Length: 479
Ligand code: 4AD
Ligand code: MG
Image (cartoon, rainbow, N blue to C red; front, top):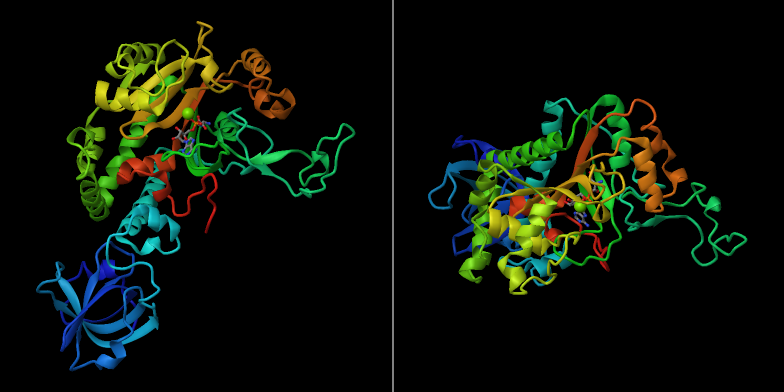
């Protein structure tokens, strides 16, 4: 018999129908004459209940059906009286496909800590929490592509191995095939990368932006959605060494168009999740409520669904960096020295504690900050006439802080070249990028949305290592 997914079975009311299901056992409860098996195949958060009547099925054959085992069940759909579902299966034939030794299987039917589950990431997909996160993650990937496709954007694949540092922050992983113990050396005793695979120094990309700009200056509206890599030693709940980034780039668009696009996209994605992931979100909401029980009232987050709706309903506040600094300087936590990094002077970089203060305490809605000091932003950003600020825009979210970073780009050749010189960015590495400013240069803008930061927000999870299947972080590349 052909297998039916549990997601599909739970939607039907075909009582009496013969079906086959396959999945992994979550629990088995047993009495003298009957056993109840909760079976899950990951197609949906809910389990289907299998009723095993020992007058039909030999009890001996069910002894090795333990939590974690994979089984195949042929049986009849019947109306459920008590399992919390409409439907259950009365088993006629059960086959054990793969046993799981109950003494050794690490996932017992009880609550495990997220830290423990990170150590068994090869099995954590089988928990309700990670099943839900994985399905929501898929829905969000799909929604990103749908959002852009519906608006006529073209997806482009930007390179993963590059010779340039798009953000100019020097936080790159080198890609090399040279012998690490005995590399070829130049006359002045430096590693000779001309002998390396690509004939030059290369690294994993930190961003697809520079190449996306090239495409936007021909196709007008493009986006990339790929993995990016940063060797920054930030061991926080919001940083990964390997994360996925969505980067739209639009010709003929200025910073205001850029902010509109960012706000539209975030609202679209939140709405998509609410409309398409309701079962998983209600589970994640309950999980969060449970976790927050132990926190003090004023430290608790808003309920998940409420928080998502809250983003949909509010226009994001748009302020300049200078306005933000003034608010922060005069804020209670700054005056009472509660911030870890006190705000003293204009020019200071904003830390996530400051970003969260603005969003959660001051404005109580998402905030977009524009016109940052040029000294704390990347070389490619459009310089304002004041000579001090650039047309950057960061979108800040509750619990997360920065979720999007973007800008209008400097499209004037001389200004871009001068800024690169000031920052010692070698012209010969980026000659191709500069050249687009010589031929048909136009105003253009874009941004990067950190996909896992979005996932943190949508799922209400507290640690970024729990919203990507196999996190890469300092001292951590297992699986
Ligand atoms: O602000 P960032 O560094 O901007 C760029 O890379 C630009 N090239 C984007 C563009 O304009 N096309 O990174 C963009 C976003 C951040 O706002 C954050 O959400 C996420 O990427 N991000 C990280 N997410 C997880 N772990 C890290 N280490 C991250 N660094 C940045
Ligand atoms: Mg940034």
